[in-house]
Image 1 (cartoon, rainbow, N blue to C red):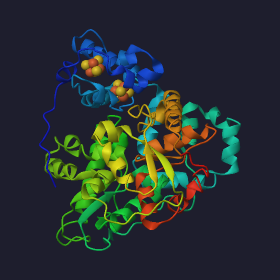
Image 2: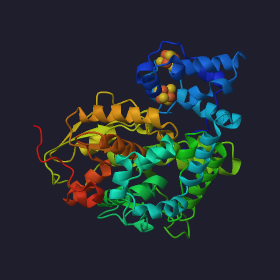
Image 3: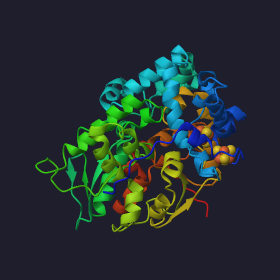
Length: 460
Ligand code: SF4
Ligand code: SF4
């Protein structure tokens, strides 16, 4: 595995200085698009930070304008001056958390989310009773009558994000080692993701099958927890470090001399959720000041790849068949932590283009956030909901019959956004399409919740 060198932490001043206030970032900024205020744009926030540096402003007085930021990093891609707003917001968020300026309700909500989401075991227990509710007529009536709104916009947003839960949900009992089919071309580890493994375990199942079919042996440590993306993106430093250490230890616990998955090292550690991938690739930053973990975390981070990035580099060898719904037009949604956070745009398109009969398209505003942004769509539901509606309209305007998204947060957000449209697009992970094509089965067989989603009439 390649080893990234330790980062030299830039100061806040280093990070704000390159901004020349040109405003090129404004049109791509999700919060600015909805709120329309300079104070909720990257340029406005940088102005605030310069004023804080100069001692002219108290950060606490402008905390709301930093909380309105989705952390989508679209401004980093757009900025011609190379302003690293991603590093800036990563420095500011822990400061905001220490200031304790949020309302008691927001503080309580955040604590509850950080106590639940990164722990699949706890989440599984909490969600188990909801299996009867998710997808049932009771849920339909509750949403239609807007009963869920009685508990506040945040609770209503959480309820709206709840996918249909079935007996198939929550299953993450993968074997420790899934052998490659045919000659082995690589040996990888797989991070399951905490929300993904509970809400959409079919995605990890498809990933394992696609990898194995392409000659990749897959190692999945059974005791792995959350990678820390949920807390990292909100500046919860101590919790993120603890989660990162646990995950590095989970892999070290099964791979090595005398370990249960064998001594051979892994060629890469893969993940199929781009929000997680972004954080995993930053473990060297997260643990660089923790001496016993610094070297191990650098090595770990250096080996992390998004599943699509890895497969595009390795090349597909498994024969691909036309999809059952041939021909099919799919629109690719670029998750922000994939496009802006990891600079990956070509890999998913390259892989999907290999499927016979599949036509790919992209939305007009591909670089704008869908509003998911980790827990943002729960703690800032109004802004997130508007962004979700705009994104779904943009995706639907392509005339596609299917939407492809490689991040579970975006998938849930888009499904929610499509609910209010006359012709909702089904949303699937790229690995699920590849899996269908390799096995020659319909989408409903790799994602039971989809039913038979593809319209019978296909535009030419
Ligand atoms: S962050 Fe970059 S794009 Fe935005 S105003 Fe500053 S220099 Fe211009
Ligand atoms: S990270 Fe996204 S929401 Fe935040 S300032 Fe940049 S573009 Fe705007």
